Length: 181
Image 1 (cartoon, helix red, strand yellow):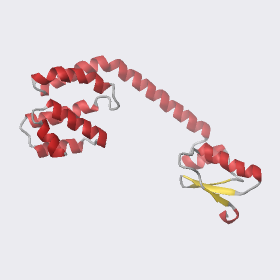
Image 2: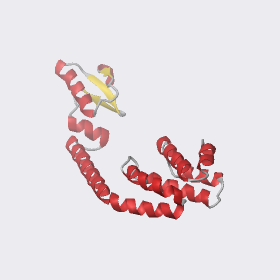
Image 3: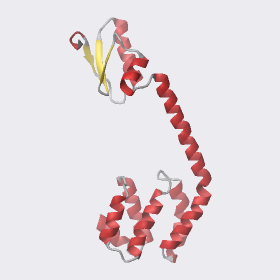
Image 4: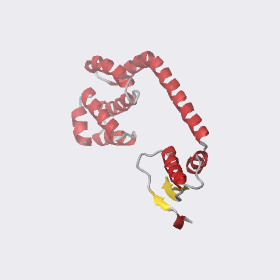
């Protein structure tokens, strides 16, 4: 069937809507064209917006837009609730820090807590750091501490952040940072 169709390519970053509009341009010109979008071939003579959405993601455009709006609303609600809880979370993390960190680290720990909570990771790195510091402060091996950070599921960025925090908040932190590279 695709032999009579002019094969077109869509640009990286094109949306489903972009692809449909491009195919509709070919239809208006009377040219049969087809193009593959995320593994689904769309044809200029039969393409519709809802049909393309349904074929590619299993939802009509309206259903997709509604699900995206619901996701955004839910995300904004969770973010607002999280921001509301920052003062109590700060107190919680101060307390947790005092259970693990040496007293000379408390003041700096207290200052970075709100920064970390307002960051991309919402303070996840605070707990990761404390777990590693606890291992090292309890005379655990560098290998044990390395296993802990490797099992925490970090991206490169969060790995580097936790590594730097351990270096700052643990007397054996420089040794650990060098060990994990």
